[in-house]
Length: 356
Image (cartoon, rainbow, N blue to C red; front, top):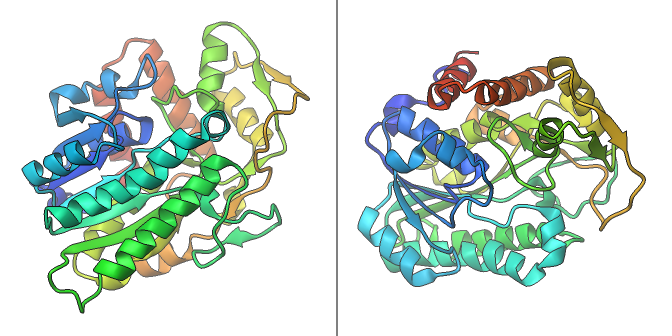
């Protein structure tokens, strides 16, 4: 892993992260600051309390703009002011079940928000590399034993999944229309990144397995498990983030990388929900499980990614196996519960990951 994410490349780079107040955005901003980048963020306030963003004191270390990705004027003004070399677009409505509750907001945020960002880059003629983060759920998931590759059909039964497929189409349209060598006045390069279910310390979102587990344990309640046999490409948050960073590093000098990439775990590390929770109980023995037969809105029971393109083209490789990812995740929450310096602890986990 060491040397693939190049700290020297990021030193003094101007980087904009949309969705910087979220779980993945906070980890990404911390890593970028640790490497010496000048980071700006654009997002709504943190949705949870506590929030990773506040715990690691990012507000003191980056230039933060609190605004909606659906506000194109404010977004365009920020891009003009900061002139970023690289943009990571993570701002999103990021959950399946809230997508059912408010589909219009989900489409506005995930689809129109993506178009707003790309058009803002064009409008201010900002020469930059843009990594659009979508989701493994962008695929037309037939729930078969199939590892999805980047040219498989896009789709989505639920509004969230469909919105991520739409975001991919928006990004592809901008890429094919404005990122060609035949358009020398268009200086943006666009790639998309599709990752699986991420875990890691600092996530307190509703309707996510690990945060729900932490909340239940804190309240001395059992963890209610709806679909223990559901299969997901679980990975530590640093796995896809390392892929996003490597992709941005390389696409600046290679327009052939302006394409989609999957970032997922090794094929033998694909786990059922129940298997992941069994691993969690090894490091967090106070976890109590309660299996529920309650049926909610449709959620995919089987979803797997093929990350061979990222491996063969970018040289990216998964680093921590599932057991290690779970151990690192619960170690973070334990350190936070014990009152540790979480900025230092988070930096140490990133260092361990890079040296693995």
